[in-house]
Image (tube, rainbow, N blue to C red):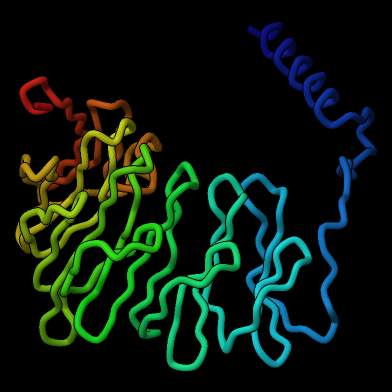
Length: 289
């Protein structure tokens, strides 16, 4: 036993020496190696700058600059000036930039410097790219209706509050949550819309999730008393509540309470009374059809 402990200590010490790149007990400094530095942009000192971001592939840099009015700067090229620029996003492949801009009493989405149709400012949502970077969607409104706009084309009219606009992994399917508010802006009903088709209304809806192949949509819902999973408009088993995996029992469950781990199975953490369950659900052949 003693030889085993000594051997373990020696091996641990040698590993530390290899990892830290130093020997001797007197060395306490941490070695830092700079692999490389690259000048990516220079800021005009007369400008105020915010929202400095790189593209997902780290090949492009963009930010919002203010010099009297506001404008986007993408790879050192100044864009058109506006009264205000709200937010911007890179496409997943880093080749496109979209942002919300306001001029006067109108707002519009600007994609790669090209302005879309103007809408009332308070009804213009943030732009969302599809995973393949080929499509752009956002929420907008005129005096009467709220629209989902996809690639510049107004799709279905909504007539309600909308959130969580999201493309599926295949970049073709589109989903969002519609809701209706009561007194004090408390939600009294929410539903999921998938490809323009409205699901059943519940008191609360959250964690809308596509399967990896985009064939199925699952989400969590509640009626004020119990919570349950809904898969392709079908209500499943009830629980007292669903839990975040990072807080309870296992690190397997990611930030969402519900997650697919294959095209036909998903899992979640649920509480029933004083018991917590890690539940794995499998979509059987008849459920798939």
